[in-house]
Image (spheres, one colour):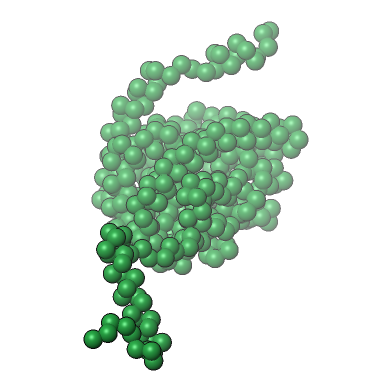
Length: 376
């Protein structure tokens, strides 16, 4: 019997015969069947910052690092606050998959779970933001954050990063000289700082960054805090106030947060997940360096061009903050077991880390005075 196909073979039969032959040939040569490669993975993100703010720039910096490190296999597009959802709606949007990811701060989710604000909106038991990130990575914070997000049904993967310098006490109509100056003051802050400043007598309103200066301009706020010289200058604080108080315990250890929709993140190849995790740490270091450069320049600009007067927060105000926070911590811990667990974990880490830091790091003020302060 002839093995030749019939001369009148149908197109369908010819296609099937060809496919079978190709598979047989590939198997005989020991080659696996290779599916056609898919195109780049695209992700749509949003930050919680206005497009002009340096914080949005940090979000773009991270996305660029990931896009470059994956060779374009993952492409993250970052939109500014409000493009899809309001700034305070980011967590829900990422969790539901409305957005694939986002860039913000954990304290913006304070309304979901008060313990989230312990990542940055407290005195942090003397830790700075870099120490708090050390606690997060090596002191159990990561596991506690995963547990916390699971407890509220948040379908996200979170990467805290980017240690922020100590934030100012804020912008005022006149210098703050004593704790009683906060009584009746219409003030903006977020996170546990809401409870802290309420405990000092202020009437607090939590607003996203872009809404603060307009509220001050309309008299809806008497005073407000945001974050740093560059952001505050870009957002226009110097247009509504010429008095800024430096140093505070309300947010002396805050950092940013990168979030991915967990379903989307879990579906990524392991190699891409590893790139993202390392990109977070690379972006964290780069952000710190950029902040030192930009904030120090804008600190000078605020004084020379914008005629802002800076004052150091009095010790009595700082001490009062610590006393009020003790009360806030006790109340929140009694109401919320996770708050208590996280606070105790931070406190245990801080007890040794802050002691080591204080004993080890030389005071920079002497060296600065030696080189830059004119001798009388």
